[in-house]
Image (tube, rainbow, N blue to C red):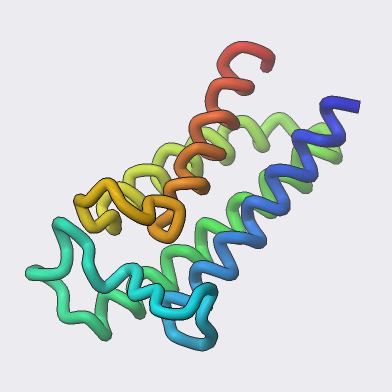
Length: 129
């Protein structure tokens, strides 16, 4: 039962990355007034706003696909799921931190929940698998 839940969480996590990708490109708003990723503490002065949104869109699409593929590989019991999930969890966590605005407010609006889920996935992998 726990294995089924883990596979579902991994796939759903990928779908949420698709939602954040759509929001970053301004295809829709996840929340009214949410300006993420425009206020990145590191990237806002380096990459123009439109380029940052496009970069985030493309990278989050890649993350989403990687999470979904990891979940599918998990369900079909292919050993590659572990390698892929480690890679995407670590790299997407780093990218989420780069997009953070540096303030301790509205962290959930800046991928904070996704970062927490990534850390939980990594802990389950380390301690269980």
